[in-house]
Length: 124
Image 1 (cartoon, helix red, strand yellow):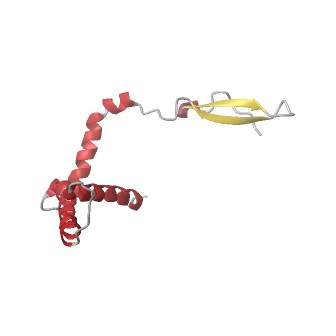
Image 2: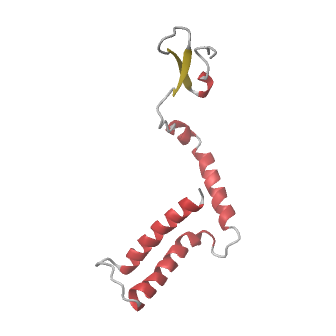
Image 3: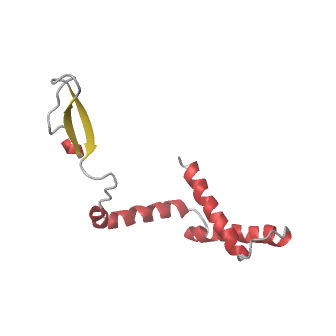
């Protein structure tokens, strides 16, 4: 195995430590570790580029809802209408019990959780 210089990988934020293996003094292996913690969020850079993040988010929303009649109102209307439909069908017609919770809140929460997990697993 070839010997690497001590500053190899420093431009990517990694530090390399040559360590001696058991038995031989001339053989090395490279242990690559991050220079900083694993959860370095770089909040200063995020705050510095907040305008760019806002621009990307706005562009994404405009592109997504450009061809719809109601635009971004679908973000609120779609789960609300679905929950109202579930309230009528399951709460009123089928008579299912919600354990004392308000029916619309019960179905709105369930639809919100279902939409979250559905989107997470469909975009993997």
